Length: 144
Length: 365
Image 1 (cartoon, rainbow over the protein chains, first blue to last red):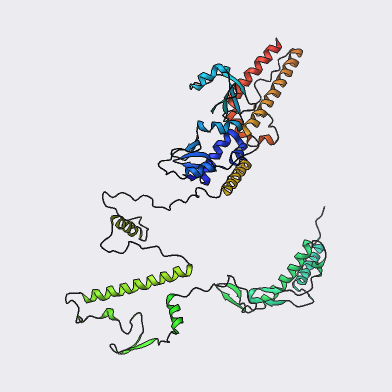
Image 2: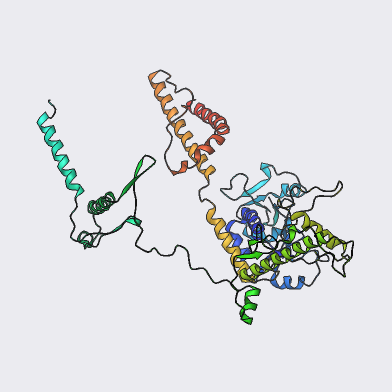
């Protein structure tokens, strides 16, 4: 387990900023406690300071996970964001897409969403923008 | 119209000559001080022109510079000249002004081990003579170096000493001893250097052959030996099945696990700030698409007007297809827009064109 290097932090922030933009600094600098990013076995975990201190007592090979896994670095050092980061990204998402209840189940099983299944979408979303998908009941479903 | 007459031309030439002569002689209150060795002329005249408040006009500065340079060159012309490879050259005298140091004063180096010892014991270097009398050759020879006085490398006979092994090669022994002395001297020199620069010599732990070295130690020693060539091991042959050594580069250093959280946070926020500042506020593709949409609408509106006018006059003065290369719109939105335009033009052209035509058709009906 180790902190991220400058390069790794930059790559990760660039990825996350695609979804939440400048709200990223709210993740970094939280009023309710110091949270930090730590790398363990190529995965990035977002963990509070207290939890980190406890996790430091576990040996490397026995430590499976700590805090929330945001994503992992691939073999070629690209950052892949995981679904486990959804809880932290959803409140700060800039561009949101809502899906109608009919298309929601289909979407969750992996199918594409047709235009008719699209409920609402934040205005001025450009093509290929990173979005967070919600159901009509405002439950975050997916990061796309 | 006639050009200037001959008399006028001659008068002008005379005037120019007089001016030139005037220019060579410059009058100053105080004479300048010259240091021709450095090509330096110091003007101690009070600078009335420069004392005025506000910026000094260019012309006055230029005139001052010209006058002083003229005086300096007059002085140079008075120096003794000589000819060097078909060029006439003035021989400059020795410079009189002392220039300040170019580089800072060298720091005193720490004493070597011997110097410390000598200082402690109060040993001073003895003055030695350059030449020594050599009995063998019967002449004065230098103390060391080429054709020195006592050169034991040229000896062709060495007596085997009493306690030594009779089969030992004394000549080889002598050469070996010399090598060891040289190596020891070199080692001491490097140690002194390391002490002077406050660094450490690379450790030679495990490099001294003891006969009881482990496999890892031997492997390490072998790697070091491979790399200790002039080409840093690039052209060393390997055994047939030996694998290439993995990059034994520097081990990466990471921040400690619980370092200073505040500092970490500060660095990350700084990184974010830089990232945000680098992002351009103008979304180029959106801007160019918007621009293109506006243009298309303008064109469509114009065409409709033209078609209406044409119908009234009973003639179809069609504008034909879209006028390509229409007036390039101005404005800051064109920044890098040309590149974006090329990309998004073709699909836009097809769809928007058709839509416009249909609408126009419907309206007409």
